[in-house]
Length: 270
Length: 265
Ligand SMILES: Nc1ncnc2c1ncn2[C@@H]1O[C@H](COP(=O)(O)OP(=O)(O)OP(=O)(O)O)[C@@H](O)[C@H]1O
Ligand SMILES: [Mg+2]
Image (cartoon, rainbow over all chains, first blue to last red; front, side, top):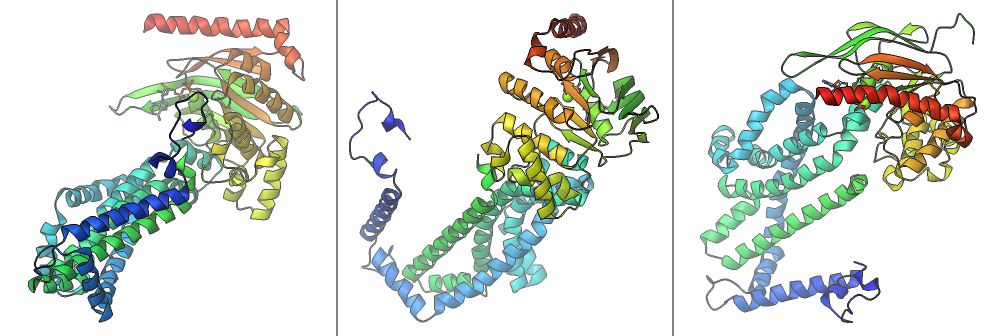
């Protein structure tokens, strides 16, 4: 980091990649360069002579524009994200309290934990026929899949974070006469925030996968059915355009979570 | 101080068992009897595991016991109370809160509004020499400063009894000496009674009116030593032949116990 300030150290070249990424502008430049290189490679690797072959970046972009200009993509994204949003809300509203309670009430721990372990151990995809049998081809079914994909990570990480809170801190609050509720609100929860956020980050990634899987398998809506439809007609470029869109949405989600984590969990970083 | 006033702490025939995972009971304390007078500074010293922390937690009202009784200011202890405050070995500061929020934590728990509790906290921060660190976070402070915050937090609730569990043992030796004199300085300006746990002989003698020596397996009181050094105690006190003599006496008692333990092990 500050090695170049050490006297008598080996002389470093005036211009090097290491040097460049030390500045904010440099980092941005390097990132843009890397992205351009990736796009260039993609352009070269693609083959547009037959529609079925791996499309170039240019053809994917054109396909993307085609999906956007008639509103197909927006409508599909809207429907899909309704599922995702509902799933995330259920996941957090149910998962965080359940996680807290499993950590604090040993009876609940014994009841809930085996199911969570089960959900983590088996591929949730295997449960989809069951969900479909119970809930049919509905919005509720798709939301359920999203929730099942993500919620174990919320519950487990919340429970671990709550259990790891330094007992001295709760002792301190108790000694000042704090009630169990106040201790939970003012000591345990804030102390557990970094762990809970780490769980949410993993869970959101899983939820995103669950969202696509739900729509691809429980046919009938959004991005998933759009992909299925295009794939059925061998339209490779639009499918790729949609895939890239989902990746970008994932990146956006992670960026939001990291931003919230930084705001909430600043204290835990050192 | 009148004769009719009950002592700050009165512990009699206190016995405590801990249950072990195997279901066996371990006797942590046996028949401990101990009195801390009003305004008195009493230290407890003893080998590791002799039940010092256990006893302090029971006086603090956050741990129950099996036999005997504990009275604080004449009233039986049934839980934590506003007349007692604890200072912890590991400081127990809330890392997501600023210094002033940490100091006013006890007042917040007791329902005091923010402007009032901040006013109290500011006064105490000044008294421990941290007036300029209100908005700092604990991790930005040295160990010594963090414990000053811990002390200010305890004093903020205006307790009559201060319970301190090895408060300076995580702090470097030089800072520690300064904290000792600062603590005595604050104590001498109040009518606080202090129960202070330590592993350091010199610290116990320097601070206290009375040093209680405990032995282990199970925890019990072996000696109670009256420290007849004049107050106020200063750096001169540390060179006083009587100080050296008392410290030596405490060490002799402890050394005997520890050597016996090592032979037994
Ligand atoms: N929660 C607990 N459950 C079971 N045993 C315990 C518990 N807390 C303490 N003990 C045991 O009780 C004994 C006394 O412990 P305590 O922490 O009071 O000792 P201490 O004198 O404070 O020791 P130290 O000087 O190391 O701080 C020890 O043998 C310890 O292992
Ligand atoms: Mg202890």
